[in-house]
Amino acid sequence: MSRILSWGASFGLLLSGVAVAQAPAIIGAHRTAQDRPANIAELSNRSTEIATPDAAYIKVNFSEVELPIGYTLEVSNRDGTEVYRYTSGKRDEFTVDESLGQDGKRSFSAMSITGNTAIVRIVGKSDSKAAPRVVIGSYFEGYPEDAMPELKSRGLLSRTPQNKSICGIDDKRDVACYSTTSLPYTRSGPIARLLIGGSSLCTGWRVGSGDRMLTNNHCFTTSSQARATEVWFNYQRSSCGSTTNAATTKVAGSSVLRTNSTLDYTLFTVASPSTISGFGFLSLDVRAPVTNETIFIVQHPAGKPKQIGSISDRDGSVGCRVNVASATGGATGSDLGYFCDTEGGSSGSPVLARSSGKVIGLHHLGGCTNQGVRIDRIWPQISSYFSGVP
Image 1: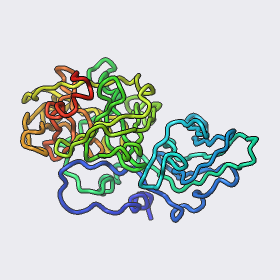
Image 2: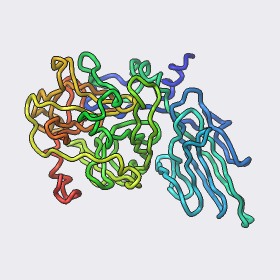
Image 3: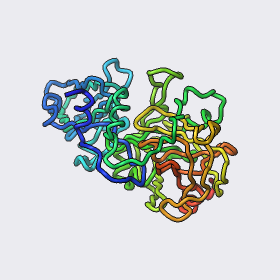
Image 4: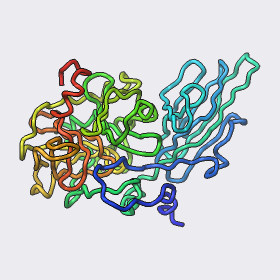
């Protein structure tokens, strides 16, 4: 079996039919003892290595953790440049996935380790006679970046069918290919990749200077799902044309403040807002979109590092523009329409007006035209969380 087929076979084929929303992209597989019995066990020898050739990341799920004072559980990559540490009294970032039976106390998931190897070990010593006990219940492994195009072409990056969302030629470009003084680049910092439950992807972005972020309702809806989500900032190419990525900062989701299926938004918080304050935030342009005004979309399409859609060959290779100022989405007139290119995984991306550099839409539908929910429709429902200041 080819590598591509073995990756894709882990979750089955695309369903037939027509999609309405761009569903979260599936970018990883859940491995249990049945799949990888050698890697999933109690740490009786104090250390183990979980390695999968070409994996983009490894996320370890602990079904039992007992650490007497003096012991530390470490999860790291091979060279120690990415390390998360957990003790009985202090923990680095972690997520809690209730669907895996985790309670956030004796069972939880470490933050994902970028690359194909995670080293899990117990270090330290204790005066207590009690021994540490750590059980790896399962883990997630991310599909390799170079396999994504073929997986996408076979319809294996989504559990639901996708409407076409590349409108003509794919005009999206990596963030690093833009001038650092250009408006799309200077507004790209607050946009993050959401790793939801270890294997699916949406886009989210920091709104306001606090701990709040926006994404789509069809990405997740509950606080328990938020706590199972990693929020990756600065996941992007280190330079234009490069195949290496910049250093990424990962924080855990915390709680859902408000969500609405008709307007397809979820407002949620992150656990460590001070960690991401340096990436800035986006403000909202609370007004009706204007036909033909120019826009751009910052996004994480199909599991890729951050890209910007700012031109469209459907618009004559000029700046993307609002082609439909009032389109039907979840409700009559709830959306705006455009030919900016997007993909599955772009769900939750901000649609920004060039005139203001602020957000006028929340991308959620493919179909060419693609569509975003109008921020002036969302704002009345969330304004109280920002003291009425967009």
